[in-house]
Length: 202
Image (cartoon, rainbow, N blue to C red; front, side, top):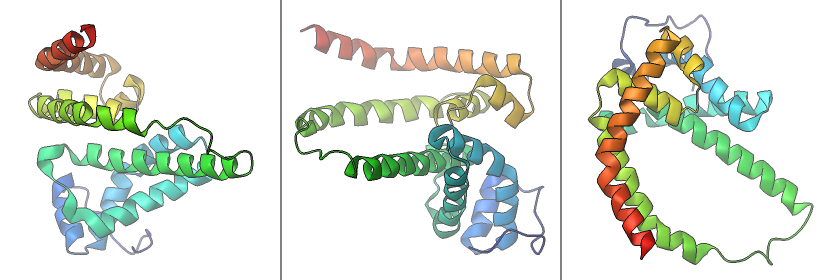
């Protein structure tokens, strides 16, 4: 990935998906424009998770290196570009924290005496996969503005105030969209949750 400097002119008038398409063809101006558009948001996500400015900066660079290499893997049906980028940043930041934790643990104690939770995890994977698919489908059916606000809150871990600042919208408007969207999600997922509660009561 090329360095971000004034050599490449941003393309501010193009939408996110067009920029990704250009990045697929190694257009560095498109990458620079996407960086300018989302660097602050993604850095804040990484900093919130890692609580370390240097680590957050490394995560940010890693995200855009990944975008440069894998822009073609984006699928519009799975969500917006902003939620895709936020998800990458969140996963990279969590990996960094886990790596840091494991490095620290290596100096303290071995983990061989911890209970094996593999069986419990495997038993929950199928139900988790079903719930995740249901959530994605329900999100896809929401109005775009409500979906965008919820994605930034869920995948990005942002507060209503931070989302409002990112979208340049009033906080009350953002809270209203999230409230309405969450109500629709609850209704869409009610059948699944009822089934889970019935299974747990047996």
